[in-house]
Image 1 (cartoon, rainbow, N blue to C red):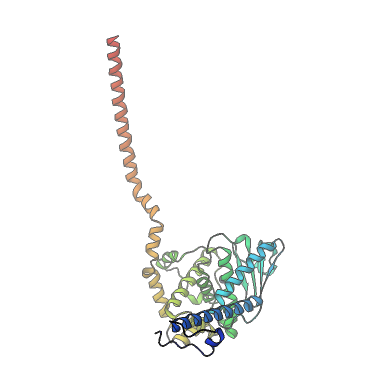
Image 2 (cartoon, rainbow, N blue to C red; image 1 turned 30 degrees about the vertical axis):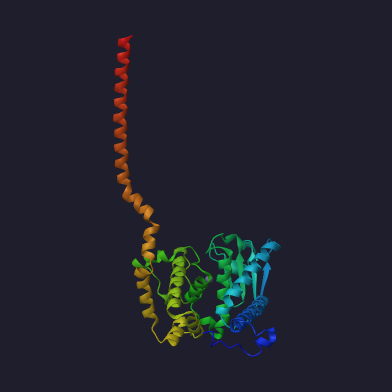
Length: 337
Ligand SMILES: [Zn+2]
């Protein structure tokens, strides 16, 4: 493959590379790779700073400068990682505001917020609001995951352009969780096994516009979206899913775009995903392992009780034997006295 290598015009001249070296091709290649790497870093830096310039980070009252700077770094890192997945973004500017608590949120945002929410993206206004008190130390509830999650919402919204109002809510939430690295509100894919067995999964058409208001339904909707979008991504790839999102329609939402891009029925994918959750995801085994302590306690309790009773009886017999021997010894001592 080394023979096939051909540096582009100007590389040698620009670097002053000496070609009389013992291994000229290798050296040219090394320099070429360095240049490519340098260019990639430079392009990446330009893209990141351009993206960063469109995302202003503000601090609400009560948030100090170092916290604001920390959030700014998280936004910068999130943009550097995520914008390459959404070519052409960011298209519009966005304001990220860090709030210490819900108290400083705009009233209309606060009124519609679910309890325990650590971040919210307002797509129409290109705003992200982070609630620091609600974030935790560990993923997926740490601030980095929350920032990435909300950035995905904004970038997806900008990427799909005019189709933005038609992208199904479940796809938005599923992709935000998939690309930020974890399910959002405390329900794991494993819990879906129970819902699937009990036939309690939502139809995705039910989650096109909005998510349920009750806590249990909300958690199930998030987990279901996360699992299904991850399943679709592994099958079709991110680019196909983003193209499907871009072709979402007012009537069919993401489903219509999916059919247009893949020429396959969404219902078929839903059936296969449900089967995957029940049998192929490893979730049933993980569920069993997670609860094995409880199962062991239930199974092991009678055995433990029997063992304790036997031990008690053994101890009691030993105690009586010891008392008997002491009485005999005392009797002997009295006899000898
Ligand atoms: Zn979300």
